[in-house]
Image (cartoon, rainbow, N blue to C red):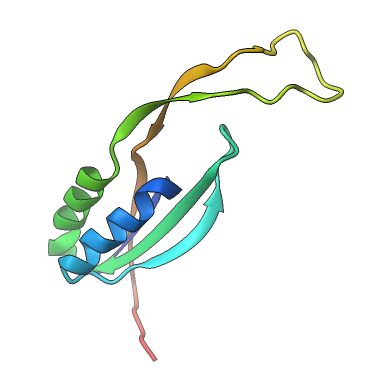
Length: 109
């Protein structure tokens, strides 16, 4: 058995969860936040049998695509303003960071 932990952007979470349910995978959704853009993320935990891992990874890959987005940097307060960029910057967002972990035991009560 494996535990798949996927950190995705909030805007992809509903689409991913719907796709997982459609294929009969159970998932737990946790709210989280990112460090770089300080934007909302969602962490999805999926427990599955070893032979189903590739199917889950394919669903995540299909539903969580990278895309470009303009962001307006927040000016530093009391910090070093030398590196501050005062205009919107295009960055790549989306996609998924996925961890696949072995599960020694699984209990459901």
